[in-house]
Image (cartoon, rainbow, N blue to C red; front, side, top):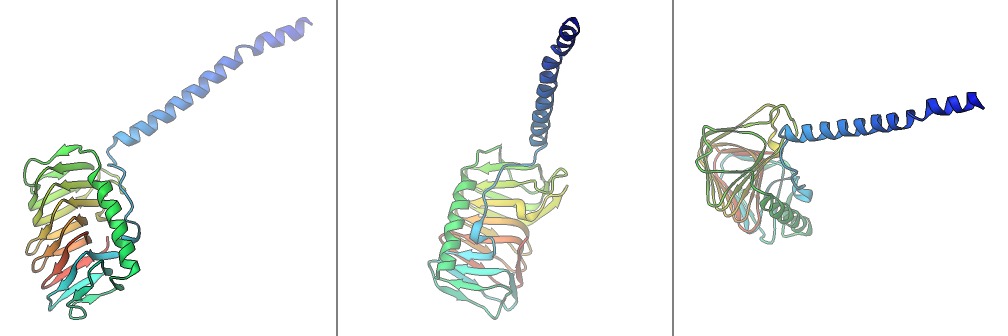
Length: 244
């Protein structure tokens, strides 16, 4: 009996020690998760759904004045039906005009646009983005956003780092987007409250989701997507759009 009681006495302290070890492991796991979040991977962004295969998606019209222009992706239009300038300009993917496929893509675009617009602002844009370096996050302006020169997006070592730039009205690009630190064009989103204009020779990267229209000047290029909800997407001479 004494030997039995002695064994129980030795076992009693083991239970709280094990519990403490479990709790400590749980705390450590929580700290690692919090630390990972605080490293600046950026906001959770919505899926583009059935719109993700499109280099160009518009509401009223799609045009390419050419003589040279390339869309290395699908081109879609809904509810409009006027896709002009192809095959003078080239498309590597499929064309969908006023059909159920384009309608579904526009529906997915609307959902993604509204979700991006609804993300809480992290940093207010108070000047032209040219000459600045941005960490992952959500940047917003109640009015227009300008990009003259180069803006650098730094993923800070995260290949899945996300960047969202919310323009209350227009987006005007007269420069370029530079990606460093693991940042990728597919994880960059430009949510535009009216229309986007890519100026002559501009080098744009990311997904442009515009409420109205998107227009390209000569020699402007986009590594990303030109997705317009209600208006047109217009290409002119020597433009190229490539999926990221």
